Image (cartoon, rainbow, N blue to C red; front, side, top):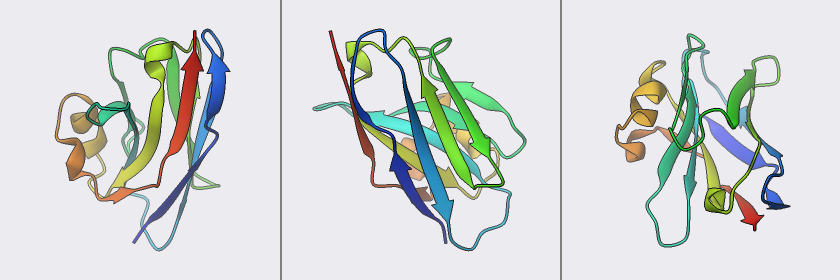
Length: 129
């Protein structure tokens, strides 16, 4: 069982940066993947970036070159560094994990986002123009 807690959201002007964190806790082995998702008002939840258990990273086309996903294994914490933010990046950002170590890259590349095993409560990001 994994518990996930996001933090780091906030309001920023276009062009600015934010770093989101997701602390994982609970009994688990290390063979799980993690990913970031977001949901804008009135829109479906979409995958943003994924990190498989073998270190493979995957990004949605809309954030490539601007966002970077990373993990501190010693702290069991996932990060999302977001640079050059745009108003269309506004939304609730969720951290998720899956016990299938290589599943996150599949989801970010177009798989079913609802298939992730564990979800956090979300942190709100607002980007103003």
